Image (cartoon, rainbow, N blue to C red; front, side, top):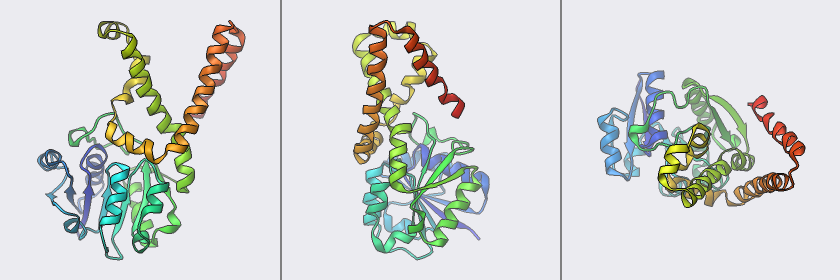
Length: 278
């Protein structure tokens, strides 16, 4: 029996999800919806979806619906989609969770599973999709007690089938942890890119930028539309994370200014321990 999977948002995350699920089973039919007509055409032409629809009503007939769009869009869809069949499973992949979890209408809450796959690249659009984006990565499943038992089982199986590691926590806890581990590093990468561009000419950047700079600035190529929404929804936690970073940076500056090289060395060694954890 064929399972209809709807994907709202045909970019990197949605496209990669389709490719991964195609590898796990041949019993899926993929139906896509995206406000960007170019994305729809590309997704259809490269086989990410079998069919394109134009409205939420048309995609509601799917057995499973993935929301792989910016976080503000997820909330908008949750409040516009209307009544769903009680067996329908809607899984959002937003990078913030608390506001999404709280914004789902009560009559649809059991239909929804709020999830965050801890993966991605700086690229976006259907052509950025890769079939192993999710493999071996963590997916955080939030507030699962609010989801129906059927929906919990569907989500857990789908993510397990594509090789993900399942982690459970509250949406509130997720947003605080994500602010430090994901959102703040993106803010730093954007800041680093802007600081360098305002001080250095392009020729010097090309000539001197090595692997370390490229690694640290890579995620500054991420979609501003998506990350503006994330920063807005997780504002309080993000500010706390930035303040923690600023404290460490001020400490580094003070040690350099005062030539406290032994203390600086110890501080750097403490930072090295992060990779023991990773």
